[in-house]
Image 1 (cartoon, rainbow, N blue to C red):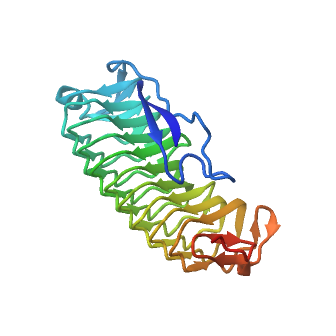
Image 2: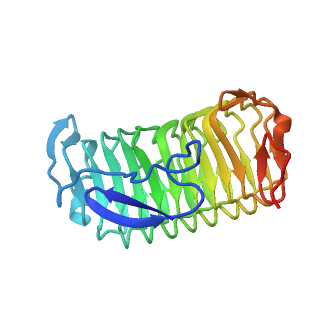
Length: 307
């Protein structure tokens, strides 16, 4: 078990994060120990404001703790800084005019938050963190197009069943970890980004039809996932599929290059691995016939199956 420290807008969490895939799916599949998602915070908002027409712009740290804080943000269209919604006594967050957050959007440790609705948010400059929101059922970001290179995390949201970001084209990294009800991940516009899905017990459907390049893809400990398909993926740094009990098929029709490592094991029901265009793995010429399906693992470049 790996222990990671996560600080969400100044609130520290020390938690064990076990499972097959977490952090960066590097050549060994291991995350860098001590990886953090840190965001500066104050105990209350310290933002200053300006106006542009009928639109208000805030600069600095913006913190939401209750309904009064939300009311004060209804005419805000941009935040030059971080937006923190943590330990808040609200059931719904609706910010109808917010289009841009230059720093981090952090939503965490909210016992009563059911809905996050940011209908015109288009860009997040650093990253987004959704962490330990026990009642969160709906995340609505229909116009979100870009998220920066910081580590974006969706972790331990007990009843969140769907993660749908219909307009998101690129993200530095997205880790969805230990969300027990998460069954559907819809990222129909994403073309580039690092993706890790680990220990999501109900995950049965992933849709990334346009993903072309990735610095890493890791999918693990997802017992309901039967099919992995990336129809447009051409290049990936690391590809790791581990401990997916129901996984039966992997379809990568145009994948040409795995820059570092291809790891497939402990997928006991995997019957089909299709990658007809795969030419190089780890800098070496790759023969698709080198994929050997075994009872307990899938090997690359070896005909020997473990007992």
